[in-house]
Image 1 (spheres, protein in one colour):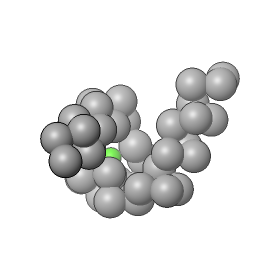
Image 2 (image 1 turned 30 degrees about the horizontal axis):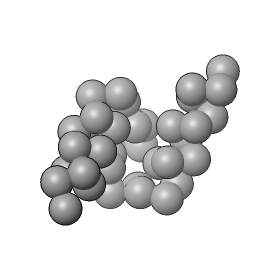
Image 3 (image 1 turned 90 degrees about the vertical axis):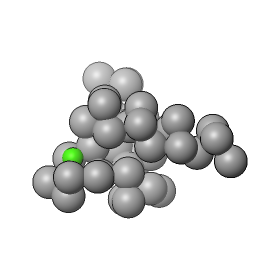
Image 4 (image 1 turned 45 degrees about the horizontal axis):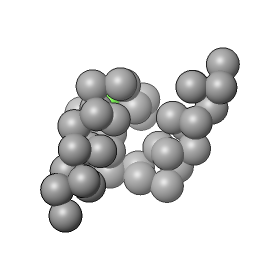
Length: 40
Ligand SMILES: [Ca+2]
Protein backbone atom coordinates (compact mmCIF):
# COMPACT_ATOMS: atom_id res chain seq x y z
CA UNK A 1 0.00 0.00 0.00
CA UNK A 2 1.80 3.14 -1.15
CA UNK A 3 -0.17 5.35 1.27
CA UNK A 4 0.94 3.27 4.22
CA UNK A 5 4.59 3.26 3.11
CA UNK A 6 4.49 7.01 2.72
CA UNK A 7 2.96 7.43 6.18
CA UNK A 8 5.55 5.12 7.77
CA UNK A 9 8.32 7.17 6.19
CA UNK A 10 6.77 10.35 7.56
CA UNK A 11 6.51 8.68 10.98
CA UNK A 12 10.25 7.86 10.97
CA UNK A 13 11.04 11.47 10.19
CA UNK A 14 8.53 12.79 12.75
CA UNK A 15 8.17 10.24 15.58
CA UNK A 16 6.68 12.97 17.79
CA UNK A 17 3.62 12.92 15.53
CA UNK A 18 2.47 9.82 17.47
CA UNK A 19 0.60 11.93 20.00
CA UNK A 20 -0.81 9.02 22.02
CA UNK A 21 2.55 7.18 21.97
CA UNK A 22 1.11 3.84 20.89
CA UNK A 23 3.81 3.28 18.27
CA UNK A 24 1.44 3.72 15.36
CA UNK A 25 0.79 6.88 13.38
CA UNK A 26 -2.93 6.98 12.71
CA UNK A 27 -4.38 9.21 10.00
CA UNK A 28 -5.98 11.53 12.58
CA UNK A 29 -2.59 11.85 14.30
CA UNK A 30 -0.94 12.55 10.98
CA UNK A 31 -3.53 15.15 10.04
CA UNK A 32 -3.30 17.04 13.34
CA UNK A 33 0.51 16.96 13.24
CA UNK A 34 0.58 18.11 9.64
CA UNK A 35 -1.78 20.96 10.50
CA UNK A 36 0.64 22.08 13.24
CA UNK A 37 3.55 21.90 10.79
CA UNK A 38 1.64 23.97 8.27
CA UNK A 39 0.86 26.66 10.87
CA UNK A 40 4.53 27.54 11.18
CA1 LIG B 1 -0.69 6.81 17.72
